[in-house]
Length: 588
Image (cartoon, rainbow, N blue to C red; front, side, top):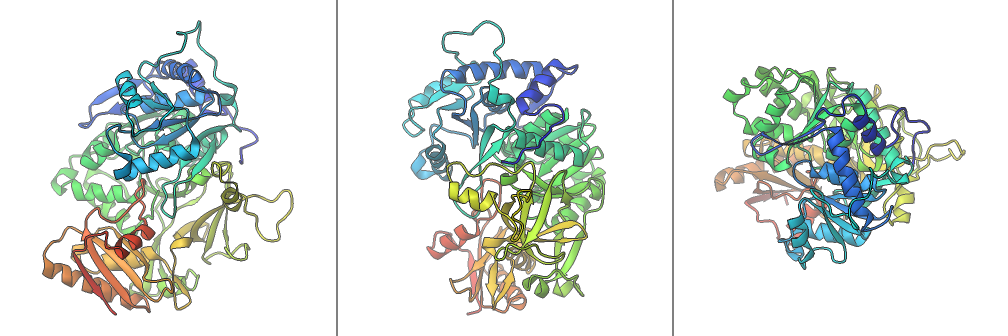
């Protein structure tokens, strides 16, 4: 695990909370939770938060010891903040997961199966819930993890009753080298694995975010992102604590149901940092009617971070154009690149500077070279994801030879940073391979140990451009094609597919063809037939290979918990006939 030698100020989140609670702003609201309509449902000052955190920590002390794992579901209001920080205060290892519902059967839901898998992997001693009633109900539920303590964060029961005075944090809570949480990856290319994130990793990574985005006590973070995802946890909980900012949060379902709640929360603050994956900005355009947009005032939105999935140039343009009447500025959109294995952020654009959007030759990219396109017809637009944040080294490396590549040459992205985590929980072999990579011929003791991201990209004038996942690359006639480029071609081929999700994968093990599946709201058979044919012909023109195209209803393409396309799962479900098809076309 890489941790900085010196951390100015607090070295851990618990130390940061203690400083906020004892400082001049200790009695001012720090975290605010909004309900489904945007109304305030909970507020906590640092002093109030610390008091509740200590109570949870005391209750956890009766369930286990420092270093034990605790399941922290996505609890409503500000209960997640209390429970997560209570784990850290007790020196225990938090394991953020989606909401636990006792009435849901494990055998019939992907979410419950995932929870069961996580519990087998990390062997928790406790699960947090919001209320005592929920804790009592969970204890009698046969479908949830057995032999664990169920602890309510609203009024945690302390064994033996409350002790005199405020309990001190566990030594691990003040140790930047100690493990803070297990961040289970979303599983876009395999089963979820628990990334071992240290206290120092969290603080260093989000201080780098703070510095890149100039976040301070006058900034408000406005977030709907799920706390069990790295971007939601870091920006919604960690970033405010290490920067002095305040935060306003809401349930992800609130945003999906009505994105206007998020936009209203943004316009209510004076200096706003708000992050979301690419699809969320598209959803705002789709769900907020044109005549409504001018009623918003988004002039105080200073950083609109865009990450967690490929950033599309069309999304940047559509959102900026759609919300120009709301005083949104295009230069506010700030793409970035990061991953759980590095805590979160690796590169990020500069807020209030224009984002580079560059068309590169499609055929040259297939050969691993980034060459500016001679014409729009032969080019693929790629969005720059910024430069490395503080104290971070990024190398583009040949994944076979492990040698660095020159600028404008595509290779695997390797990262050496204070945010690089300690490995995968209980998976020593995988950890050595991913977290302990060294460049070929660089065997000195001073040489960095890199995280192999599994992502492909290149550097152009200091800017990182991400081209895809190493495991998702389509190899056709000995050349590499990136599935998201194929997906972009298919989606743009017909109006029935406009702004929809798509997934592309090799048709068979010999990579002799390409399959593409596209979501659509269209139901007219004639229109669907024309759409899959148009998409198939467009893809066939871009790739020298047989093509099959399938149309499915919206929200049918498998995705991870963070919204990333699960291409292998798509291939498997289509192969066994598990996805109901609306139309299909094949060049074979």
